[in-house]
Image (tube, one colour):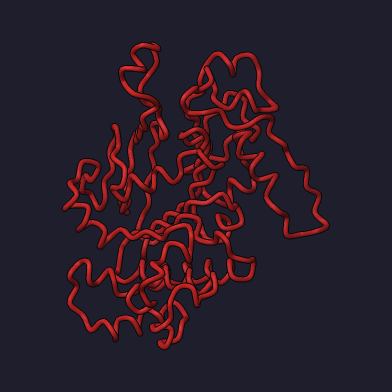
Length: 328
């Protein structure tokens, strides 16, 4: 099956300083927030993007939604190139690509009722439908009673607000949903409810989901594959359970070690990374992770690692990986 979404060699840049000032300083006027990223998502599949704040995850989401232009690379949706799509073309694409924003309450207009929020996409895109009936259907789909249509966002709990966000995202029957931190600000029991809801919607509707999060429990619960980002690059990609069981990149190992272990009797050695993630404006030479890596050797500071394949759909970028020989 061909991917529904295909991203190849994506580069996204942001301005670092004015061009005149950059010329006087002999510096680059822009920096790469996303650097040469490639991935695909098939219909009915869930991919998780994982990494620290500032790693470039949300920039990818904004670029896929047309809110930020790619500097170079290709983005194809259902075989159509969309990286250079016009504003009008993106307006039509948003019928097929929906976004769930990070703040479950703050992303909802406080002036609109739940009913108006859920059916607003129908109005924006000129979809002719009985909006009252559609509102009832969508609310019931996400486990909310129809009488919630008259409520305002401030009258909702975080979990209820997130369910409204899911209903709103599904209003136009999209084929791809981008979920930015779908469980942010929710307690553990509500997180599980939201993740189960997304999984149920995926099974029922066959949608593809791109989950952007730093919460590894979310990734393990809902994703088929995961991509670990560091300084705007993928350092490891592969099937979720395979990476959780046997990570290859030291950065992946450190992230997994910090993930809470549900078994209180299980031994867990947390790896503390030294320092903070460098700025993408001043990328380290060689392997960009070497300054924080406990396994770094002199070669790591001299030469950037290439991509190494490690079994089916599993790849990493590291000179001295921590995993064993490939099981391919």
